[in-house]
Length: 365
Image (cartoon, rainbow, N blue to C red):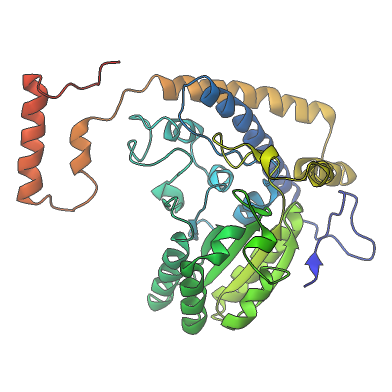
């Protein structure tokens, strides 16, 4: 399948006209990219220091989630996988909540009920996800069908990694969305490693986009390090979905420049020569070159942004680390609109155990 790209190395592709997106939109996206890079460094260091337990960096893959976020409306819903925290930030997720989620404390919107990097925020329609691979895809398809049933032109976006295409939920979601013509855009971040499993060990197809053919939907393959190509593909797919023409599968070809997570050592399974080739195609560098060509970038402008981001991230970390642990009684909240009598009794028992000292909270180190 043809790989759609506009920026190439940042200076464009011969014979291809680059869509001229609004300057303010491009500059905001570049700022989000720099923010994610800053967070990746800071939070990875914090994990090494024992201040958080786990972190999954986005370095090298920023163009796909941020380009997708640029193409979404405020009322659209995003069903993420591991590396879409950047999309949440671009859509308005508070920085201190982003950091606190990695700590699981009282400033975390999910009150410590999720693993780190499993961001969710009702205010921006960013849905909580599970580490069980691909389970968010049927959710995205089902929510899209619900939007259709309600007569709305809202679109859902379901993210996945390349490994998710080998899961049953991938088949169920794409088949259901295609049959019902639900307004869903499936975005596969093909970073070429399902943790450590390479492409040819999990599929016989040359691309992931071509899998769409079997489900009766369009399959599009884009350069995932080209933010303009990603934006354009997602925008066209979302417009198609709003017109009632059904779902689309987008494969964004990219590369993970960091370990899968803070628990991984990629040197055990990746080809260092290929890694070096992809380092030269860093999406931040490509985008910077494009902005420079459009006279939207200067060294001082980027330096000023970076200095501001350093301060913002440090302030967010201080705010997050100052928060207390969630009250154990919150275990009984956010599940039922009206708490059943059984859970009310259990809450009373828990409170009694804490008051009597039988159950120590907060835990003693």
